[in-house]
Image (cartoon, rainbow, N blue to C red; front, side, top):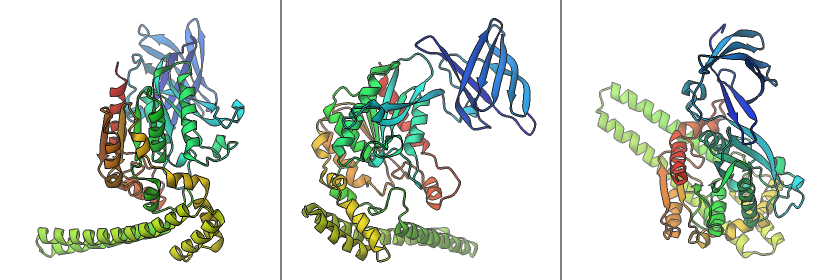
Length: 475
């Protein structure tokens, strides 16, 4: 077409009820899974993307191996010939960047113990591969019990939902209580409510037409992974469980290690960002100086040792900062745990926050103190995952980013493996260089810097999940 080219794919499938559906993919226009209206006549077939003004009216040629006709979009018309691929065949990687099956999405509402009226249940999205099925399925559970994206955070579960549906799984993801389409449901005050929501989501997905109820599993991230483990301890029929960055330590130990404990969801940790900028500046200067030394004839090994020493010094300083923050936060959480009177606990915590963060406004300190002493946080403090791990019997994948600073693999993964030792179907992996959101350092830095570059989950992480899940779903 004038000014370049664009690649087009139309996926056509017959559903269980006998109806025909089609979806449009246009790489250059960033249109994915766009619904098409299909109109058959005795000698042609027409596809209309009414919302975006695209259409394709074609006839079958070459014994049904091609569709040839007129492609039309706003401001442009041309002859287009589409090659046919077999059912389940992979679409060209140049079109979908390595992704496979197209799918359709549907807004759903899931009843929970706190909502007798289905219209007041949890809202969410169900993504279904095209075709009759029955398909295996998975429920995604977000970190922190939330599925609404906060500003400045990476939508890991959004990417996983897209990726897994394209691999042939039906994917259900709910908005967390009190957020998005679940705003009518009060925010969770305990993890038991999150467990109940996950159980409701499983029941909903298993009952859907086109789903194989015996091949439905859970995938959780962070706190969502621990919720998934708790659900699995009560549901021996779960087909599989993928745990991304779960905690093995108790709640108090975990929260005390959180560098952003007092921040709102999506709110940047300014102290941590300042340290990151300092570290980047120091190492940039060190590498610049190394180039000068190499140009001046200093032996390469000697130069490399100096750069490594500078990095080691920064690492040591960062560890000291982390340990000092951990001690202060652990002491603050211990006061909350031991002080049952909330008003008294809030007053002490607000004072401690002002000492920790002198620039924090008093009103903000009071607000954060109220959050840290809420039933929700008290529930987190009291939780010990070891109580559930011994009862998990389904196939389980433990996946951690080796550079996860929120849920430290060295402290948590061994405890998870120990608690699950009676389960002979457990696999565990640490992926080098990845953080809690399974982003590479480059993607994590781009996210922290607020650049326009869209971060994407590590291909190694996505492939590790896909390969393991496929193994569990084999007959």
